[in-house]
Image 1 (cartoon, rainbow over the protein chains, first blue to last red):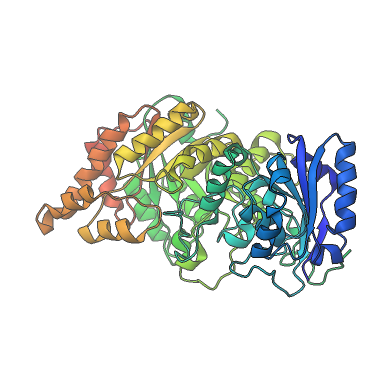
Image 2 (image 1 turned 180 degrees about the vertical axis):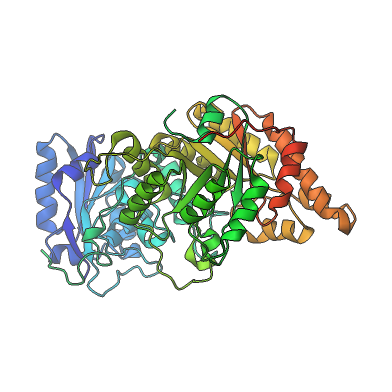
Length: 216
Length: 309
């Protein structure tokens, strides 16, 4: 079970500031279980955003959003609603957010922080997708996680060792910052990378916070 | 002038600057520092002292800097995020400034995998750009990273590195812009052997007007042997050594290769000097410091302005 908690509303609103229309996605798996992005929370978020003057082009709560193949299939029936939205807000853990970012060519905002993977992995096992840092940065990185996939955990990358799309530390793995730049270029969002990303709050992560956590 | 840095003074007077590099020993031997510093003295305006380069344990940069300063250099403390979290970094910043050192180069650091303690835990609490911003805020806002105020601020001339040859190439100037915006006063580049590609990068830098916001010092280094050139070409990530460079060294008799490597370095200095927006060179004659006087003289960069700190 991946344990997530919704980000503070002000933070979510700052992410969608420039967007008029939004498509909402939740998950019937872990996010439903933890009350961060199930049917109920997606409906509540829809109301909240509408009250803030946003148009919600549609919403869906997917079974196991972190399963890439399943999500791709499911989102196909919402093609039009997704296409007409400026962005997608995803209410689930980091693995689910990254799955959506990978299968949809659209700006994806993370609505939750992942507190713990509860000892389990997400369904899409081809790459380590979430390191349960508790302070999700996918908003700034095109939906690809530099905490889980950059050898130096850079938030303002890429470093000087990225060459040919590979990481200098292990050329068998892709440089996630090359992937981030590629994806943001495709979305015409490269300007996002010109913004300074501030030092991270590590106190909410499992690797730097207390070894035992209380969950919501 | 923001600081008492000799390098800042030289750059502000629009004099083409020369910085050097000094690698501390893998021991507690102070004589290594003093010997290298004596060679560099009078030939450089400031001198980087590396901070556990390639993640190998060496004498601390700041400690070696103190000795280098006693020998008459204006040292640049290198500071990496690999080994220190934001608490340790800020403590070092305060100490370095209090000891009378004037310059700091902010780096993420070579990954621990490449060094002699590959099982170490890398820290990477901040990245190099966040480090630049933190030191600038300490100096100009008198604030710690947490926002708390301090009474006496550290007057450090702030540097950062950039690699014009790493990927994605199109993004490299944007990254430089971020470093400039974060507060870097000067930039030292990766060693340049591919002058054409460097010139292309400089054009992107000028298009953004960055050369007017941050002083750019071009990394240059003599090559000792054909083997070294090939090693850098194939084994060092982020290095761009064109075939023509290897061929030039291969084209001379074996006993003349190192001489040719020095000549090549001088040629590159002469070429990059002509590129608009280049404010100086950073000469990295690593473990070959004795070539520095010869190179600087042959490139017509002597005498250096009298050192004042």
